[in-house]
Length: 412
Ligand SMILES: Cc1ncc(COP(=O)(O)O)c(C=O)c1O
Image (cartoon, rainbow, N blue to C red):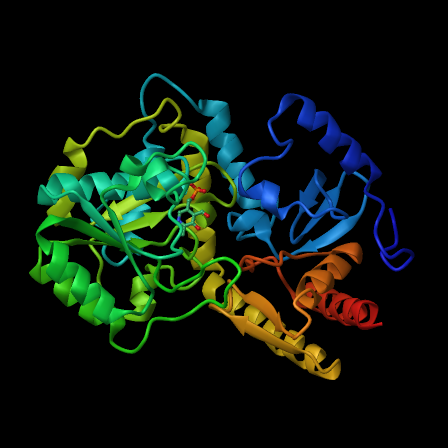
């Protein structure tokens, strides 16, 4: 095991060798958003993970504040979730017919999530957001999708930016984008296209990449809800990233409004592959009529894992725990930054903090993240982080020490 204090950068020779090997047989070596997260001197491949830690293939240990980009909410290898999945796996996972655990999971979600009267299951968040759009179109007979600029809903073609490689203009021809918190822009879009808009889809607060995250203004969601109702527009909350980290009843419950559909994914099963769309009774028939399926959609071990995860989140009062840790983390990082005459802006909810160092030297933030990585703290410089129930005092102390050492290193 390498001692993070011995070197400026931890040894990554095995990771680098593997990346070269991967590039031979996998386009890009590591693909999708994971590719953007790969840092030159940072870890590229893990060897194992446990609780709030992972280890890279070179044997370096990291306190992980990225949490697999969201799914890890109870800690890696949570024994209760893993046992539930294993038990179901032993009975059968992918079988010609469904397992009753699917009903148990749907009942769990319907009991827990405030607006949920039914649930359907896919694999990734993008399955849920695409299904939500299909249900909205089926219900309203309208086509257009209203969304927020820089709002991310997955990698399906309608969700991608125009001119992205492999995307043609007609893929997003029915998508209208407005700025976050811009009610004038929203009203204008409704007056211009209201008769054609099937749905408004948005995360409950704005969490773009590379920018400070922003809460809704006072009255924002109530206005949106009212106008959507009046104009027969389905209101979709994309809770894929925020789900289970703000309010277990749905993030809308925290912000005080009532959507028609909620997309869930990421943290729902502590890393097992499953996502869900939950909705109101009024949309049940449309949800039944759209064709939504996939060979792996009925895998029952992830369903058992999701049920166990949700039960644990309730039992452990996960939101309070994650909020406490997130608030302490924010206080610490802001204070440590001030000791080095640096302004650290922390935005977003406590369980999903986005850090940004405000400095004339635009490279400082990125250099500080690299220095943290080199000392055993896994961070990203362009995306919000994720807190889990497994983050405790021990990890906070490590984060504080590393953050301080990293400032010492980059300020020299
Ligand atoms: C808000 C939001 N919606 C949808 C998605 C898509 O989820 P997935 O990558 O599981 O398809 C993401 C993924 O980051 C997301 O953050």
